[in-house]
Image (cartoon, rainbow, N blue to C red):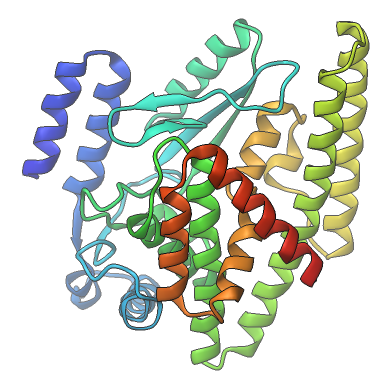
Length: 346
């Protein structure tokens, strides 16, 4: 609570409604938390909630013992936030660019989104950006990391997933405490996703849960295929935006490519027996492409890095840290090379 109070003071000193809403939102999340063990033992706790929190507690220990993730108080408490999402992120990109708008903050550095603890506030910001000519997208977020600066709780919003996705997200958020590079959202999210992927497979394997492992692998393959479609369209759009076409022609080409992507992705989902959801349910634009690729844009490189360590997490963390120490251009070049080696090995 002392750290949260300090954050409130910092927000006041920085000024502006954005920092104040962030401080208030963080206060509310932390103020309502209780130790997971206490919640499990409470006779008023619904049995299914108690069961799921017991799974979290087991996975939290596994994260330390088997994945080398931080052994601290993060995700040892539970907070019922009373809503589906804890934060709503706003993404934006210029009309003729697939490069995202960045927002810069005192602690996190520059990131490719701006988070709000109120959906209405996020939509207002999206409206302001849209009025300035940006493509915008707003998406709900079920969990986030304070990078170890606070003891992050398990949130009720995270329980919307099945057990495998819940545990995978736990691993993802803890990975941010291992390594975080200011001003490189793609690096940070792809690194954490690589930890999440390998960690959940190891977790399900240790539990001999073949059905859940098969389902998770199927979902990841589908995600990989979808991201391949997205990457191809991003490249095509970039070429269009950099061309000598008139703005009207660029708009027509843009709309045609994005509509074709939506149709191709929907067919891929339906072939896998899934209904289109999330980003497939609204009209695509540059900002939606940004939001889709943020978590996996550098994932092939980190898969290759982990494979080069024979799956040893300590080795992987050291190798990723060395990449983080490079300047941005060198880091990007090295990640591109790793991604190429991962593609050739498939």
